[in-house]
Amino acid sequence: MKNLYIFLCVAVNTFVLFGCANYIVDTTEGVKNIPSKHANDANLVNKFDGREMLAVGEHIGFIEILSPKAKDYLRADTPIVIEANNFNWIEGPVWVEAENFLLFSDVPENKIYKFSPENGVSLYIQPSGYNKLYPNDEKKGSNGLAIDNSGRLVLMQVGDRRVSRMTATLSDPRADYETIQSHYNDKRFNGPNDIVFHSSGMFFMTDPPYGLSGKLSDPKKELPFQGVFRVEQNGEAILLDDTLSFPNGIGLSPDERILYVAVSDGRKQFKNAAIHAYDLNSIGDVSNKRELVNGSHLIDLPGEQGNFDGMDVHSSGVIFATAPGGVWLIMPTGEVIAKIRTKQKNGNCTLSADEKMLYIAADGYLLNVALK
Image 1 (cartoon, one colour):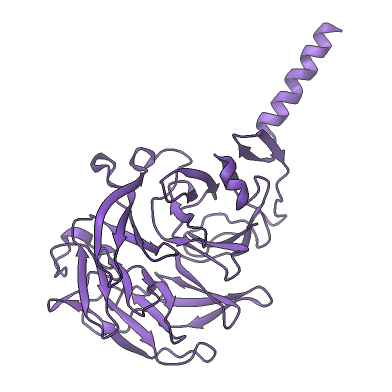
Image 2 (cartoon, rainbow, N blue to C red; image 1 turned 90 degrees about the vertical axis):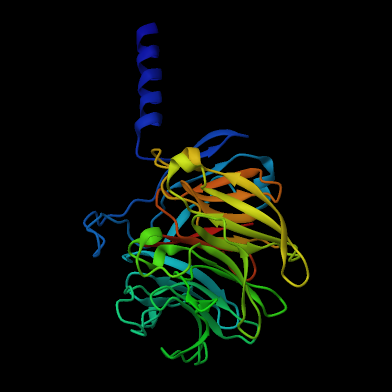
């Protein structure tokens, strides 16, 4: 009988450890075993890279709770749901409150897609960021998207190396753009990446070298740095920081007194993969730069796919930031209180207008996570 008891205990533990379920990790409550929702169609593959993909409606990954503070925002057993799939590399999601839909870029495909909870995904506009303005520009579309104070779509156009505004309305889109800014000191931007608007109408942007095939050493690179800029309402670009290696995602605190900038430097030896915070005054000047969180030690480790990239800031001040392994929930103090582990590289994320849903651009997937 004793041997039977031991056998049963080993069998049960083996099933728990190696069964098909996903693990929802909560270090404040122990480990919960939640059955995953698997697709019957095991032959779905990404048309761009041939990788197997889960179907729309499936669940993927798990949520890791690191502090009780996270329970104000999400539950450990909340599923990460696939809303759409079969993209190349998606980025720049923005929730359009006036129209009740989400817009996001597929950068390599030079397209913007629309997602609505009622109607799913459809092509919104093409081309989105490469319009053959200059010879030998990279064939890359838009990245970051934003809605300006007049309700117009503003695009970080990587291929064209400019920030532009769509001339058409949001409800009747057309691939016609007017340039807001494309140069600093008469030199072309590297490849505008991400954007956040201030309530005054000015905006902040990052300009890493991802729009150039040779990146830092590309002969088409005109600026000797990768900048963080403020762009005034008249289009004037003002340099705020030229010291970051690969500035990427950008966000503002709810009171607009702190600017956050992610650095997606994958060169582990330099220890630059981080999110920085700057104090911001009323006219948009920065001071007191400090490192909020660093994830360089996680680069290339198993289960820690990706790097710091886009972000959104909750009305409470908590930062939802794409990061190694998923999306991190970060307090303004730098404390990481939870990780949404998507098992994918993640480009960006955004909150719905009511902050009840988080949308994640995760490589070839559009994901959502319900929030409290």
